[in-house]
Amino acid sequence: MKKAIRRLGALAAAGVIAVSAPVAVHAEEGYTYNYDWWGDVQYSPDAYRVAGVFTAKELGLDKELSSPEGLFVSGSRVYLCDTGNNRILELERKDQDSLELVRIIDSFRGGTGSNTFSGPTDVAVTEDGYLYVCDRNNGRILKLDMDLNYVLEFTQPVDATIDQNQGFLPRKISTDSAGRVYCIATNINKGLIKYEADGEFSGFVGASKVVYDWTDYIWKKFSTKEQREALESFVPTEYDNVYTDSEGFLYVCTTNVAEADLDEGTAEPIRRLNMMGNDILVRNGEWYIIGDLYWGEGGGYEGPSLITDVTALDNDSYAGLDKVRGRLFVYDSQGRILFAFGGNGNMDGYFKQPAALDHMGRDLLVLDSQDRSITIFTPTEFGSLVYQAIDQFQSGDYQKSGETWREVLTLNGNYDLAYIGIGRSLLRQKEYGQAMEYFRLKWDYDNYSKAFKQYRKEWVEDHIILVILVVLGVLCVPLGIGKLKAIKREIDTADIFVKP
Image 1 (tube, one colour):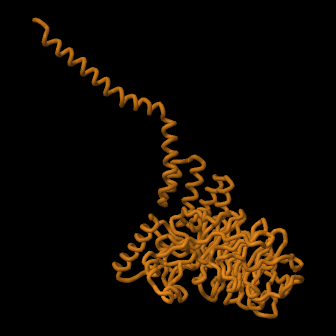
Image 2 (tube, helix red, strand yellow; image 1 turned 45 degrees about the horizontal axis):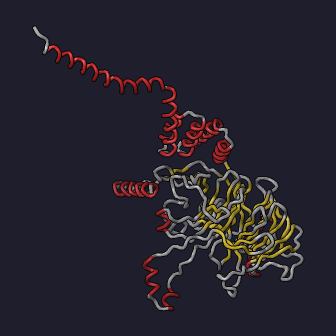
Image 3 (cartoon, helix red, strand yellow; image 1 turned 90 degrees about the vertical axis):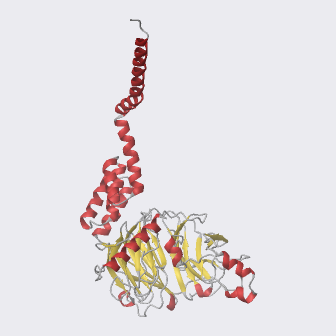
């Protein structure tokens, strides 16, 4: 609620400025930005730089990429689904600014069906050395070993709620440490399809709650069959992508969101699911986790960010990819936006149609389907310091974390999270008074209250004798005064009856 009120306040303030100012003055647009407590855009030093952009030419291919869709990183290897060419490219990053072709995977050995791919849309590689391919047009998910021998395939789930005649079109996949497979299929919107390691279908995970309007529901009750079929169905949201983080939780994202729901904070374009399918994503940031807060026209598109892919770093930070404006939004584990960057265009660091996102350490890799390229971003000094401060805090080195956040402030004095980070490090070091000052500077009410509570407790413990004396004084002085007044009254009364 407070986020919605604050956002309305920021919009109202912007409207007042626009109306009252005879000439509009716009800040020069930057590449990297963030939002402050008021919701204003604050441009900052770049958090990432482009380490390289790789097309078929840079990769040494004799054929151009065709509608590439899937991307997966495993160690120093990058696996790319060259969907239109029915193949998978295995690449290796030997140094920071290079990407080299290792092999072209366009067929495999064994199995009972076709030993080639047809429209592969996604790929995943497990730590024990198995390759999973989302072979969409063949209606299967393949499990191969690293020598490209057939091991197993996952086919259309047998379930009473699924029409077995509609065809199986797997689109995105992810695996966990136990060998389970989670799949998003184009024509199935009941959540993630879950397969056990032996290929057995075991149910759906993380289906969205069905949301509908009562007026539409009543209207449907009185409509003809033809009218009901023309109306929008009350069905769960279909996910766009899935990613398994280092702890085994599933990050999912969806572009099937309404502007009104995003504005009110009821939409959840990014979620983190546990094994029960419940969303456990922490949302303690000042703003909703929806990408851009304001939806002016950008790149010919006017509307909210549409997060089409998500990846999670080892420090629980995560990044979402906006497919309509070509931007990346990086959040910390508490849901606070660290930085946003990117855009639509032809220059390095900009995109035409971003389709997939993954990470290698702190580096981010983005696949552009229309430009048919992979862009590798690596953190700048500013970005590295932000991550370093987060890592130090998570490892319990609060003093060094505070020092690193101070270095961040020397590069960007308007970076709200640096003030909050210093305050949190002071709070953990029991420097409550100083922590309160940093929280107060950036309007962090929640952490300020925590620091004030401890500060008050510490002050009482340090001044307990004075507190007791004051309490005793407050209680005893009135009693003493009352007693003296009573004695005086008795004396005065006794004098009246004394004989002369």
